[in-house]
Length: 152
Image (cartoon, rainbow, N blue to C red):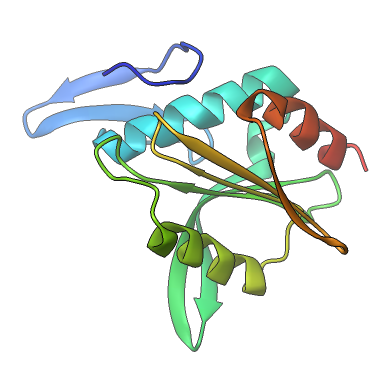
């Protein structure tokens, strides 16, 4: 599957019930679904391009919204263990609709961060949140912005 992300090496193994990918952040093998492929490829890109320690990336981070437990796909923390980026991933066949953006903003209300990223591997929506409002920024700036927030 060709994504609009830099190529990276993923550890994949075949089991009797399908393919699995090694999630280096969770340190376990997970079922390789199209959405998981997007997550693993994106997070490998972010980790390799910023030098952030894998221990500062939480995949499937639990967030409570209106009394219900939900899971952010990925959250990156800085060295002070403050969240700095929320990622929401979809399979390449799933468009990034308003519903997807509503989902990531709901997570952001409970887990305030300066950077939000929604991606289906083909399209990426990168948002900067500041006190004076929100703005979009190009995907090419993501590593630089994540690194800057990480170093604060």
